Amino acid sequence: MKIQELLISGYDILKSQNIETYMLDTQLILCKVLNKDKLFIITNRDLQVDENKRAEFLKLIELRKKRMPVKYILQSTEFMGLDYFIKPGVLIPRADTEILVEEAIKEIKKQNLKEICDVCCGSGAIGIAIATYIADSQVVCYDISEIALEVTQINLERFNLEKRVKALRSDLLSKAIENRCSFDVIVSNPPYIKSKVIGTLMEDVKNYEPFIALCGGEDGLEFYRRIIGESKKVLNPKGLIIFEIGYDQKEEVTQLMEQNGFKDVVCIKDLSGNDRVVKGYFY
Image (cartoon, rainbow, N blue to C red; front, side):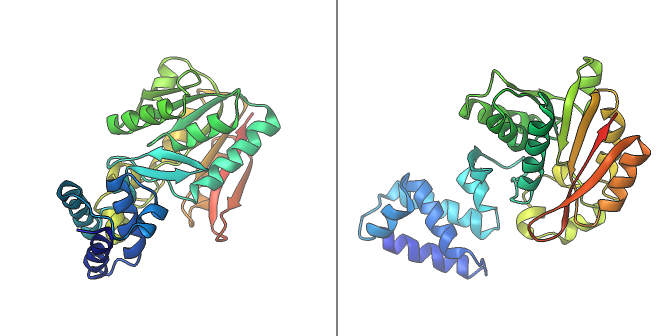
């Protein structure tokens, strides 16, 4: 089959499932299969594709037809201008989380902070972005998931950060407490969706992204409580904690931090005007 015929086939299959991004998804999947860029497939529509490549393309189109997120299929996602390896078992980094990273970087530069901890690191996107843009920082990425640690390690090697960033298995900050570590900054995008809400999420999310990375317990605050409580044992004086939050969690997370002795607690909105980040200092 020709490239043009494969594209039309992919468009028809995905459009029949009401996938709004059917054209872009089809093009990206074919780019992956052929190991070519988008310009190539647009300007070489009459090129014949061999049977093995055709079969691989249709197999991946079927995955997208079943609503697997295209970024899992491509094993690639862009975040903070960096191209990360991604696969099922870790949360796909969102553009909203860039607000968290940008705010963390601003505070790190302003206060000249060095020792950074990324809790619930997933793909390592947050810790790696900070390490990339703050050249003298030291970062520890913690996660309880073996898949998350595997993906983070792949990304550390991809960006040549093994000397300044470590990926370690830990139930939140338990390993840091056990090893008597100390940090200037704890940054986290923890699971924060209420358990009863998970079932209402889009199919792409609820059926494919890891439950462990989404569910924040009955009230969505389980991980904030634990991280805030544990952080007091590992934060240096004037240490910063900075969280991503759900759009409706500003008051509750702020209150949790203030009740635990954090000062100067403020909330930052995302580009849509929703509350997105809460930060505060532990003196």
